[in-house]
Amino acid sequence: MQLGRLLVALLGLIALLSPVTDARADDPRWVFYTGNKTRYVSPWFEGAHRIMVPFGCTRAPYYAPDSRCRDKQGFHHGIDVAMDCGTLLYAGRDLRVVSPSTLGPAYGTRPLRLRNSALGWDVVIGHASKVYVKEGHGARRGWRIARVGDSGAPDGCHLHFERRKVGGGLSTAAHPVKLLGLKPRPQN
Image (tube, rainbow, N blue to C red; front, side, top):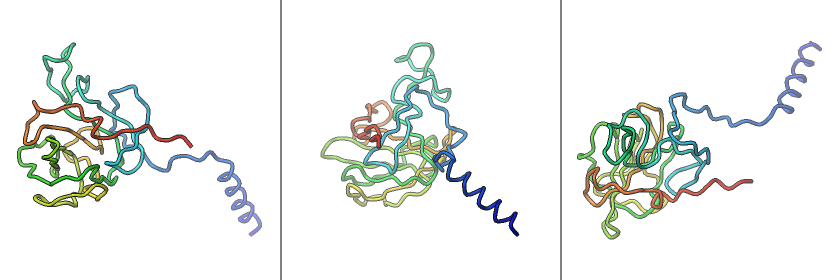
């Protein structure tokens, strides 16, 4: 009996002296095609996360070589942000949900296309595991719109965030970083 109490006390002491770690288990499929280790916050998502694949030319192997890029690199039309499966996504602006039917399977089984006609752009969100908003409805800034998933993603759960002209295809994609509103996580 005393040995059991001693063991419990010893385990408690070890727990108190152990460094505090992030309880989150990173997705082992994540590969970061950027040296940037900064964790960012955004009005579009919960928590602070790293960029996996930035906008533009990339050495990520799943993009076909593009004439805009050197060394046979591919072109990534959005920003991929590594997140745990199930991370909540929010409308970062007031938007209308439109049909994602023109998006291919690379965006997963539940892609989301959101529109702000007044400003002339669409947001494409890929790889969602759950979508909370319906086509034809509006989404106000701050509303829960989806959860992050890995459907159609070869490299684990992440947010794929793209900015396009209203109704436009890949050729109209523009750098989305300003719209995504990324800010380095505040240091405590």
